[in-house]
Length: 229
Image 1 (cartoon, rainbow, N blue to C red):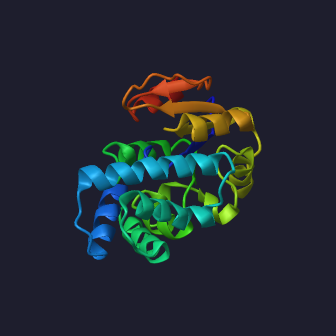
Image 2 (cartoon, rainbow, N blue to C red):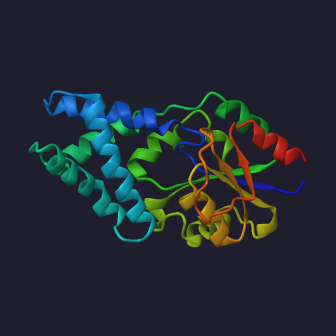
């Protein structure tokens, strides 16, 4: 086999994070007695959240600061007063309860687990990812699950990949493949670390970046075709 280790991203690769996010934001806003308008509130929040996570990838903000800063900005943008610390606590509580897998995730990892060593690297917050991922029904198929907040480094920094391989006592990069949906996080991170990459692109968006994955798939099960070649 060309590969022995498959590193998976979690959210928007195996897990439907958008659904988790949507439910968590709705429940938090309602908990704060704010009249909820999904079209408006979700759009505004996602714009803020996308920017702040990109800042994390670039090292411009810490994960500790990220937790509350996004809700401070949300309060200002919506012109609605609430305590960003309490809002963040409520949001993360609701988010941690939202573990939704994509249709093919279970079948894929169950199948791959028979022939490959599997691990997860996720840019995320420990309290959230513990419930959503480490306690999920597919967690048993992975040797390790690395959460960026715990190790104080995030994708695309190659140090988090080094940490993941050290955890499972593996050193041969030529036999490692990362699978993820983010070009700037998963794919760039894999390139930085010197391993092959597989971009999961279910919506078949055009790659307008200079980041070139080794492989590209639009359906998770296509990964098996790549591995069997």
